[in-house]
Length: 75
Figure 1 (tube, helix red, strand yellow):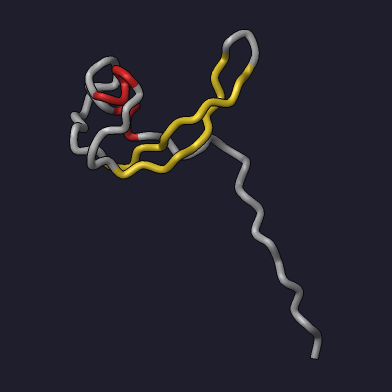
Figure 2: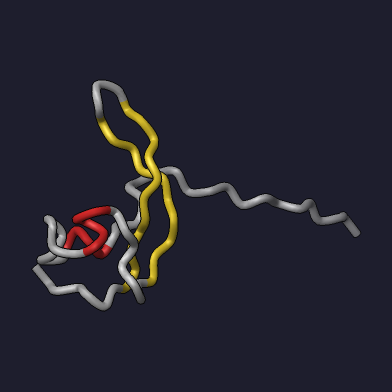
């Protein structure tokens, strides 16, 4: 009987990363503690992530992928 090889799952790097709830929120532009001063919203469910931002060249910055938020208002 042949031995099974351990297979490491590769992180999916194809396609866009999962989106944050913030992009669909009415408060995304200066309407919540996160968008005003980058203070996490109390009670949100979010996962720390790094995001790329353009500033002459691409830079990595710390961010969050928000899954649920008590201040969310569909926009």
